[in-house]
Image 1 (cartoon, rainbow, N blue to C red):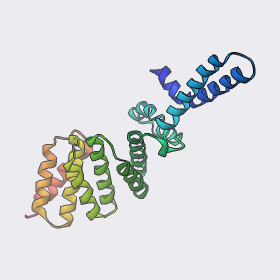
Image 2: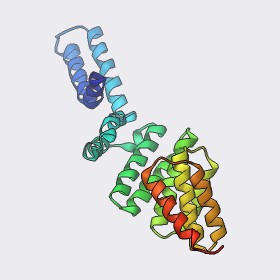
Image 3: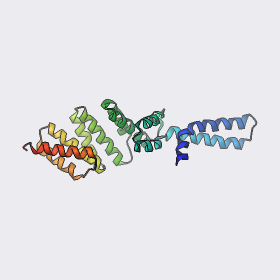
Image 4: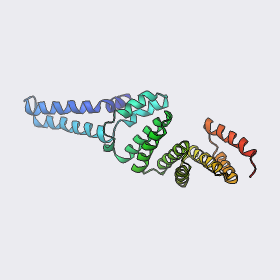
Length: 217
């Protein structure tokens, strides 16, 4: 696994080196054309995969370790994101959006997440998670109309229970803003039924339960 990660990290330079070796073999009289073709083939594979697949596989370990700085370095090493295959490009923009969210840069987060949604994903669950994030960003910006639109779209898609709980809590806040307490309590009940294990979500549910218990409706 470590060797594979090193290969991904340095494959562009390995591809360039293979190309140079191929040229030397072909034109400097250091070998025959068939040996050069082998190195040309390795160069094409390495350079192609670097630009069209990218190094996103490398972010898994630093993300699990909470090493945001390394994740940012890996993402910033992608020079031409529009060359990435669509599912990978969608993940790229989602990661950029998540980093912007962590930095509380909601405008930038919204920009990247919209790019991810525009690219689309073959997995409905990934698309749903992006919609949830867009809904929460719009909510943070006080744009309740767009937030409701994104969250309703997410709830119509296949999403995991954690994302569903977040989407439903967003709907609670939207309907509290509309002073529709009955709908808020209904969304809160549905959020609680997701049985989230996320500490922040659990705390938010308890706080909203206490608040709505004191509100008639």
